[in-house]
Image 1 (tube, rainbow, N blue to C red):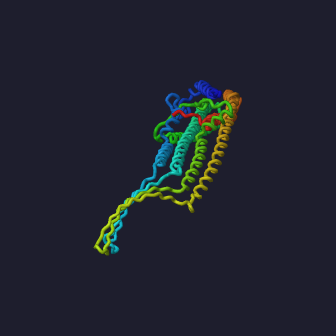
Image 2 (image 1 turned 60 degrees about the vertical axis):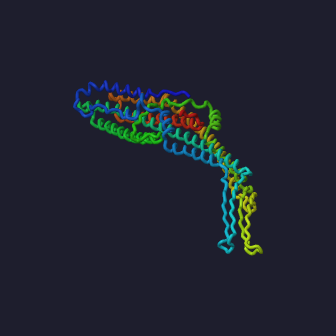
Image 3 (image 1 turned 90 degrees about the vertical axis):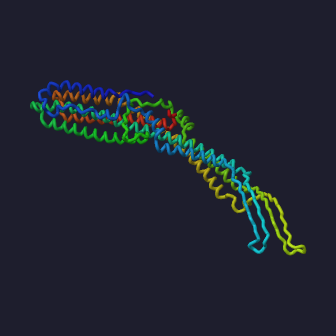
Length: 454
């Protein structure tokens, strides 16, 4: 997408400042003791912007993906899902039984039986396979969810970065006009001292200077809040200094798809949240298969070794003792007469329908997000072109011409201030258009799940 330059307005402002500074030298030199002749304060923008060493949006994105605490915690879900998969692959534990029977306490001395048994559940109805299939799908779903979290985090970082750049640019414009008014105030103050201008003009301009200072303070407060949000998203400590170096005029993104159809095709193939919705539908189907497998009879194979000692007192030959050794084995099968897992199967069936509806909704949402971001991007680009082709240049020229005419007495100061405020409003609208292009482009890349360099 073509990126247009918008520096002409700032250049005109700088030229105007230089011109009036040159024009004011002769006048201000007549009264150098005035407070209005104090040097201009250093720019506050340098606290937040560094064109050579500042951080780019990609720098902050990489740091966010590595340091964001919430994302780090969410990634632990992957380890939990892997543990569940490992657990699903384990077979049921066998059971060992030991039994001791004695007749000493019931008047049958000498009667004793000792037995040791072993039983093992047999998953012959597909329970283990269904359990493993469900755990694998859940692991894939967790991976897709983490990828979607990363996608949304990148979008949040870019949005916060766009807000930061917009506020920095507004501060630059406000400072530029404020400095211009300060230079003009020096000229008017000298004229008032010489009796060439009315004091009301100086008061009007001082009000405008103070108003712009107040505006600059408000913008700086919003800028500080935006920087704190940017630090939080990127996992940067609040006390660590941060400066940025990009500009709204040239968003540092790859070119978006050329058409809406191409963007939709990429999004439907790449969006991790859509992949997650499809996997959740698949997981619901696997859950139904597991519920059906668990409704089948449980089979338990068992064996038992017994040693029986008996004593017979009343015999013609006296007391006789007998000892038998027995080995028992068999199979235990549950009968699903009452509980055939009807509730679990009904719940799994409803979960499939629910997951299907959610997947269809996510598909619609993806299409809407791509179309919306594409439309916003085209509208923002059109607005920027309109501003660049005429609005800003003409408004800046009007302010410059009225200032020159005011020097000659052809315009009143109030007319100059009105036109100057109109220029400032135009600049703010232009900044909003630039920020909207930045945001919409970031949203479009997020909507199509453009690859992220980690």
